[in-house]
Length: 180
Ligand code: FES
Image (tube, rainbow, N blue to C red):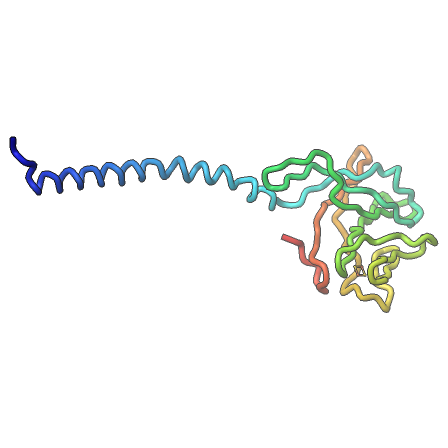
C-alpha cells in the first residue's frame, strides 16, 4: 500500500477550499435578494405624502369657522399594516360663498400637542403651553410656538370631496420642515 503524497493532499485541500468558496459565492445573490425583500417595508414607509379625503364640502359651512376632522388612512408600520387608522386631525374652514377650503394641522408646531378650538370659537389654543392662534392659524402673542399653525395643501374634488395632503412637520423650529 502506498501512502498519499504530500502534494496530493495539498491539492485535495485546495480543491475542497475552492469548492466551499464557490458554494458560498453562489448563495450570495439569493441571500442578498432575501435581505432586500425583508428590509423593503422599512424603505416603503418613507413614501411621499398623498391627498387623503377628510370630509364633504357640505360639512364645512362657509361661515369662516373651523371644523375639526380626523385624518384616516391605512398605515404601514414597517412589517405591520393597520387598515383605516386615525393618523391625525385637521381644521377645515372656508369663507362666505367660497369653495376654497383652508386646512390647518391640529398638531401644535411648538411640541406636537393637539390644538383645541376655544369654546368661544374665536381662536385656537394649545393646552400644553398655552400657545394661541387666530382662526386662520396666525400666532397670537405671547405664544411659545415658534411658527404659525401648519397649513396643509387642500383641494375639492368634482364630487365635493375635500382632500388634504397629509404631512407632519418638525416641532419646535421656526421653519416649516417636513418630518422625514
Ligand atoms: S405644544 Fe403647544 S404650546 Fe407647547
